[in-house]
Amino acid sequence: MAVIDDLGAKILAALEGVLAPIGQSGSAAAKTAAKTLATGLVRVASDRASGAISDAEAKQYVDLLANGAWGTLMGQLAIAEANAKAAVKAAFQALTDFGLAAFGLGWADPIVNSLIANL
Image (tube, rainbow, N blue to C red):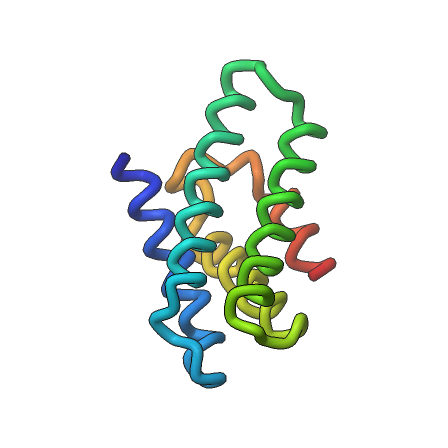
């Protein structure tokens, strides 16, 4: 799916921007985290649009995706929690900078901004 690939590329670029200075660029963990986030966000958007989940449930899923991504980075790369959270925060910030609406995720702006503020 093109949207997932485009979204994943934006996420991966942001993750790499944080991971490269600590010697972790090009890792399989970053690629996995980016693909998981992209796929999850598109799935949440689809479920929300169809009415299968509420806004509150969508927020919970986005939070879970973010926590899973930084957990994956910490566990697989053996990096500090602060670095993993910074990478995930950068990924979500890149999405808001690029424009979530471009991916059909405009509704998630407040959720993502809240997540960024709390990471």
